[in-house]
Image (cartoon, rainbow, N blue to C red; front, side, top):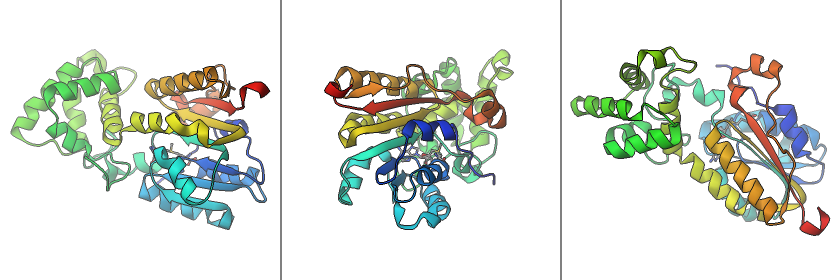
Length: 300
Ligand SMILES: C[S@@+](CC[C@H](N)C(=O)[O-])C[C@H]1O[C@@H](n2cnc3c(N)ncnc32)[C@H](O)[C@@H]1O
């Protein structure tokens, strides 16, 4: 399996500006790529507290970051709980926080996780497999209107009605259990022109389900609702998002922080990957990075 290639690696670390002697939170450890670079930049004594809700990512990050010893603490939890969790360890305000949202290649490329329509596997999609309903539970259990709303809202899927109609018709006969079954069903319910479009026709359906299964937007909103209290004066918050729904939430939150005099937006426009990065790593194409500086009004 290919390792996860960190998106906007240099840019994220530059905007985060880690220094020795402080604590940085990485809310989305994944393969540990950003975390490692942050630790290198904050040598010899900068500390990093890393979170991930996926136990597999936690194992991988522990392995990759083992050489940094006591400077690293790895916590298996949702980043929405960052404030409480770091307080448990006696850490108050921190020098910076990073979120690199979405999935890692480690998750996407593992058929058993059910995130990808390109490989066959169980329709699961839970980042933390011990938590909550799977995608199959939702596909087979939600009412028709609920499913339609979900595809429409979180997938911005214009053929939601047709796709859900086909899902409901199919599940009356037998449960939909695999990624290939769902992908085939989507393909068979959309017009031919959509089948040969820029993106795979199942992209939006899978995105919507993943967001629902993992309550992704709610976690982001909860994190943002208390994040500035956890930042020191001069601390930076850097967030990389991968679709417009997430980016909108981040953009609006940063605007509200600024209006409330909590600091200033450092990136007037979102930072995007270079052409070279996009061609090397197509997954980076939709990435947008935004950075915020916490600083009291009288200093800004
Ligand atoms: C794009 S990857 C991060 C990659 C990492 N920055 C690197 O350089 O290797 C996103 C990670 O965030 C995790 N994740 C997504 N939402 C989360 C949440 N609400 N709480 C904790 N971890 C989350 C996923 O499990 C995944 O491992």
